[in-house]
Image (cartoon, rainbow, N blue to C red; front, side):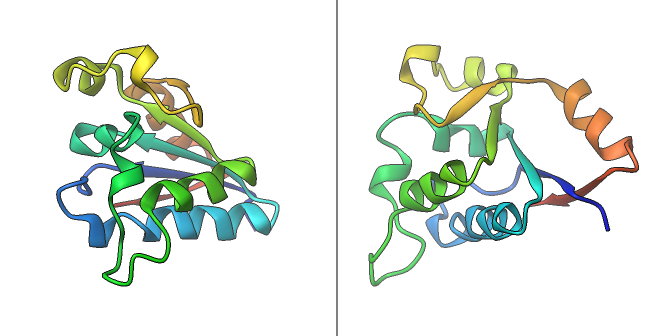
Length: 125
């Protein structure tokens, strides 16, 4: 069984909060199973990494847990978050505005290297 998982968040956005909890819940689940997990944020999903955005949205109407709290759960288990540099620029998100859980900036080459490596499995949202 592979012990590395890379996730691409491309089609989710803060504008559709009901879609934003599952990737982080699944990432946390995988990390709890001792799987190395990396999440790449691209396009509008990158906005979730900006301070104040994911803290204000909830994946369900009961508002028990914010998207940010789901992200924190995943990060506490060792999940790494990578922002797309182009998307940061497109949305005018500067490094000082990133949540502390953001591991860094990584481009398409790093993501593709993970997808092409037999040791990794991938999921896209």
